[in-house]
Length: 154
Image (cartoon, rainbow, N blue to C red; front, side):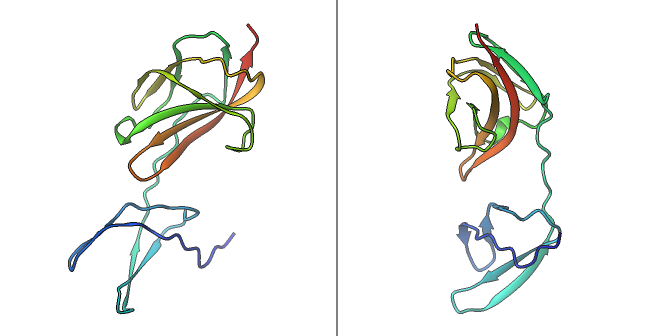
């Protein structure tokens, strides 16, 4: 498919005569090269082409099985962005985030770039559920991996 005129507004952190600083919010922009248009207060416009380097999503098994009372559930992979902010693990009964019941797992034992270890909090959800791993940085919430998981009755 060809996408044209996709625009995602950016929030400026600082602006001076020599430097404009912002964190890239990609939105639906996944094509390279990407063009940045900067418009000043007088209406002058500059165009800059650049390439977005995408970090791969963590590699996690596609199906994980948990008991309601499991402790020390370990999700192994890579690129869990431990240094980027605060991590969060949530379980939902719907693959589309926010469309179903979402239960945050509050007992995070450890979070590294290669592994997330948490105690399973009883969600009340049964059967097919979805695991969402999030990293919250100073600008936004980043969903790292919606994964299909299965919860077994105790």
